[in-house]
Length: 318
Ligand SMILES: [Zn+2]
Image (cartoon, protein in one colour):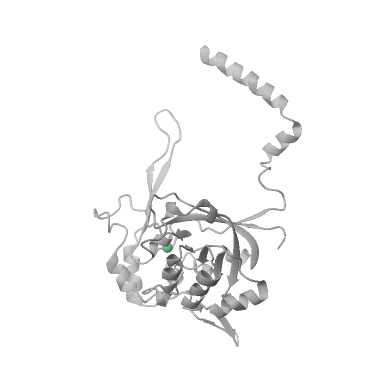
């Protein structure tokens, strides 16, 4: 009885409240307007987080169903789980990843993540060469300081505190892990394949430190990966002479595949507390400049990185 009375009072109050809200305001709520004006354009630069996600050799991504369906009262409730590296899918590398004194994930302030001016350097034509109808891919192309200066000649100086995104065209390989990692060696590829088991109900192994990382597999593939990235000269120039906040790529690592043993770009950026973004999506949809970025990583305490929603908003005046 009491509940019924409460319910009818609530309904009455709701009707009263609705009549007080203007027709205009109601229209605004109903079409979910208010946050964005019609001319605002947002672009999702994140890959979906799923089993097609590429992982670094020796790591895994595992999804499983925790529970689901209708319970004894007929209520629908489902929940899935996943286990993965912090460095899976579109993600941020905290400077601490390559600098023991660098910022950890939770130490990167919002001021460095939200509404940050972005630029996009399109190196597709430097990586993909068409001649006489034949395509040659320069797989381990490293963007150089000269390439950055060439971009600035056309587009103006990179603003201080910007995030510099490098497009290589590697995104078309997404969904085929071996192609995306540029694996050439047949043996190494099959070792990596064996290490990745999808949709397990129980993670294999009991040692927490190695459960999702197999150093033997990682070592077997070291130096056998091929993909473009930032050359050491570009990293140094952007870090020291342009004081950027972050750098991102559409490939699996910010250093080119054949340079991941010493990782000069990672080390250079991290040494200046510059964060990195890897496996960023949809870079071909961005203009060279004239957009701002919103980066929303998981709040992993003391994390070395985290899957991140990367969103661009195109500025009206570019
Ligand atoms: Zn990473």
